[in-house]
Image (tube, rainbow, N blue to C red; front, side, top):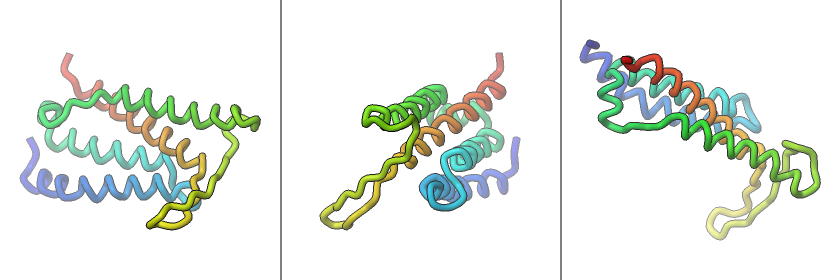
Length: 138
């Protein structure tokens, strides 16, 4: 059983940690960060909730199959690498395309961002699958 202070602080910190995780993910191709550290931060936020509230409480709110996150991330990362091979380049070569959107303007879409998203999901899925497995009673 945890204290009221731990429960309150963890509920307040959860959205901040998740937003920081997404910030690390999106800044990763230009600055320090990326899919791996962003995924670790997201997994730490959910793990904090596991520790403070317990596995049964978290599963009563939502019952995630973290192995599906792992599989989806692996698929995205692999398709990113294979996608450039279809265009005749080497596996995992970074590609970029500039797209003009009506209200936003010109944005640059980089293939490494999709690879980072895949890594992000793989790390989240793997870590939380392990944490959930360690916390279950069998």
